[in-house]
Length: 427
Image 1 (cartoon, helix red, strand yellow):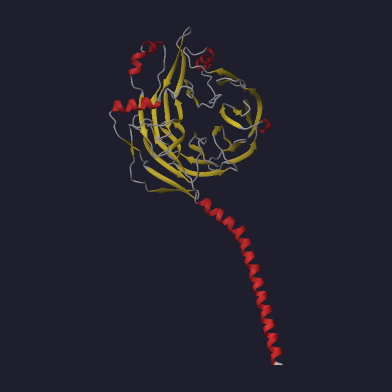
Image 2 (cartoon, helix red, strand yellow; image 1 turned 90 degrees about the vertical axis):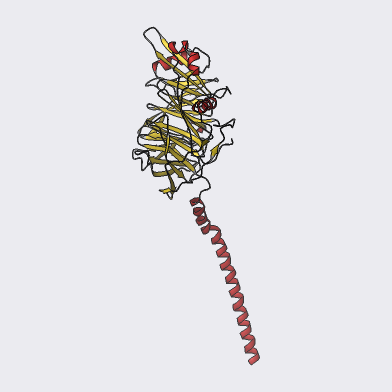
């Protein structure tokens, strides 16, 4: 009897042990499944909170053109790409990083205030102001963002080009938005009640051209770009009428235009970085025109030599902030200084962006330099003194920034704003 009872007990314990092992296996499998799902989301949040890339927004005070100072900078925990940009609209700066639009209040430029960011579902590039809206483009879409309340930007419905052609570049002027498609068509949109409405499609000619819009009309004239002198009549007329040019070109060169001067990046001539064109009416029967050639590297070196500058160091902003979880915090600066080899043949590196305001040219270069130059306005008088002008120095200032690679530049009265990546250019 005892033997039978003992065998029963042993059998019962073996069954319970087997059930326990099976149950533990089930729990293990359940835990394994959960570790592949729920913790994955938690891990994603942690990795996104610790970004691999950063970008730098810098405010440069230029009220004294001869002595620019780095007023402040904000380090953003977001990666910046070569086609991202920074613009100024009113008292706010808007800049893009890889997938975000950021808003910075610069009503007190020396102490910028980071307000907010807006995330997009795909990589974005250029941003432009268009009335109470921003236009932000990705590869195949463009977005309108309502900034009537800058601290609360609102994303409007996404738009596409016809047949969903890819977007190469775009510009906005007056009430029209101009977008170049990868199919070499120019699409003209008007903005009505927060909606972009296509009003004209223009096939672009297969040559090197600039675009001059017709005032109050979606019509655009395609003007061949010639570097010869004198300036062609097609190019001269928009300059004289101050009708202006779109900041677009056929081959991807950067184009910058003020009411007085047109600037074009030089991609064909290795001797020069930039060309400028200007024209104005002298009297009822005469007009004056001119063209400037600029080698920024050579002129920068000539400036350093004329000023007796033999050594350079990167500058530090007066105040440095960082953004953590959407909040701006002041941080201590790295007190170390980095010497710059002035003898390096590519001291500045390529021009990455430039702006024209009045008769001033503002330039940023890949190796972290910012310079201001007064443009020569060629007219009947200056043409007679061309040799004298060549000997005269027109660079006003040349400033090494903190170690970074500038991507985009915006200019306002008394201040310049630079978007950069900490990644240094190869010197």
